[in-house]
Length: 136
Image (tube, rainbow, N blue to C red; front, side):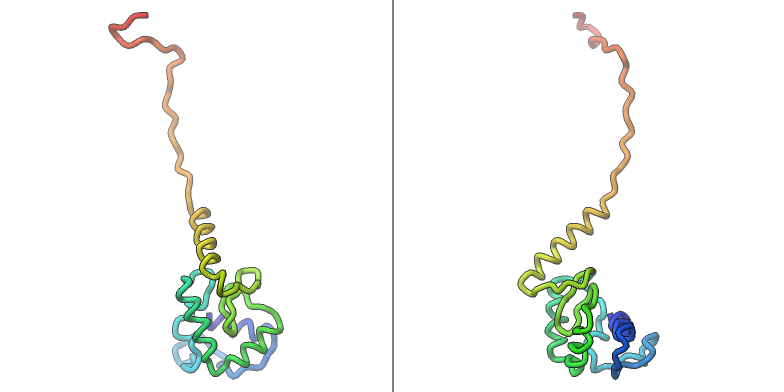
């Protein structure tokens, strides 16, 4: 999530106080709650509880005002950004509908992952005969 947020900010050409490199542990800013558990900010994988915790953490983040300014230039995709959860299309997900949205997301994911197993057809004789001892 941190990498996605940093790339989103770079794409929008908004100056930030974030480090230029995000490859190593030394590149994270410990004041940013999204660097501790980036998956908790990812709306494609996080649970309802994780997303609500991320929204609460954003509200107390020292960079909230900066994130809000950046979010006004265009919504983020598949992440919690400035205490707002966004879906893949960049549409905000309301807190009241977050749980239902996650259940729908997970249902779609399960449906897409189902694999149809191939069934081997049994040969059926063209003529059927009565069982032995029972003549018709």
